[in-house]
Length: 315
Length: 267
Image 1 (spheres, rainbow over the protein chains, first blue to last red):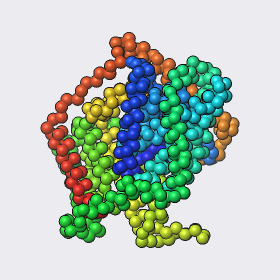
Image 2: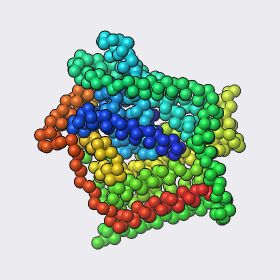
Image 3: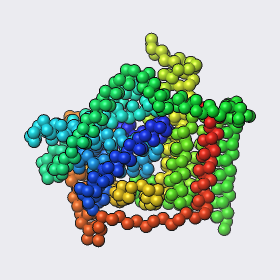
Image 4: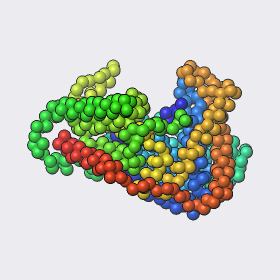
């Protein structure tokens, strides 16, 4: 029933621990600020409004359309949420959506949740805000600003978020930057067009039927800080990713210097030499031994369960 | 019961575990897995045995869990280039025409490690979701000091998730009955109009879903105010952990710590 979304939800196992931890810290810090900002502006209305709209973005991701030959595109909603609610409220809404997707549907990992919130919620919202506000300023309040701004915000937020995913994978030593960056970026440049078209479709409907709602996020501009943050994120990722992809060794060097790569952990691990655990020096033998122990454990559990169940039915 | 809710009602060993214990142990399992060095196969075997044992104990169906856990497999494509790019002893060469790609042993080992680690983590996450009610998970998150407002927003989102997914299914059904359904068979059915037109229609649906959700939020807010809501979200606290629950927590954490320590021998 659920379309598998474009693969931006990073599962567990694909990010190294330092990267996952770093992204958790960054996300929690921004969520903290967002919670304070939204509490100040919405007060006691915050919980019902954010909760229902998070459910709306979740449900909105089911709205799909045929692209070609059995594939379909669907809304992701970071830009739409940012344009309609402002960046801080959008961050809370998107965080809730990504968290429920991870916890309930295993769409994205739990340890990787910090990174997924960062990419799809925080990067998406900041970059969309930057793009939308910039085009709005250029348009000077004319109508085309809404639509061109909406398209630009949707496209840019998807592409920049995918670059963030690619860089995190590269820094984790999971995917070489010179392959991950062009692949992720390229695919999402196409997906971003679909996102842009859907976002424009939604905005034009709202513009025609409920122009008052369209003004909700605009009425309270979030300030220059968010605009600058969005621009910096977009710029840094747009510059860093081609660089990383042209000089993958450079990225690997940086990663090793900061202990991101597993290879870089080896010196610390080697403090415990092999001979401390004799008997399992032979790795193949150890694997077989562990496999046998594992099988025994599983069979023990299965047998115990069957025994308990039989006793239960007899009683 | 809604198809969205993964919770399996049952009275099993894992179901009876306190949600706080389950949340911490699931998190600790995934954390331990991510900290294991690449290629520590003996430890992977033991962790996999733990994950499968937990699945059996949860009695939600081993086959269902193993099948659902393979959902994350397509993402492995992102790690596939490692097989060719990591330096090391060449294993074999695949070639198409003039292009030659050398599969290296360290590359293959790192790739297989990533896939297995990911698979085990997803199994444990599925068990957490199938054996714990979402409302209990929220209480556990709150007990583990997750921001109060965020937990309240998640709780409200969960209540309206079913309402709004049904709303969006109605929108899809309405479009299908206007004969604009997306083709599912893989045939290049045009399903009406150009690509931009189809995307704009989907956008219009998203827009009206948003308007309905926005208006619903206003009504929910008014109803909450009418029932005395003052912005403070009050939730019952979970009772303190019983000694057997605490024992399960400590035993689990100790086991993971020991396995992590043991994995140092395989670097």
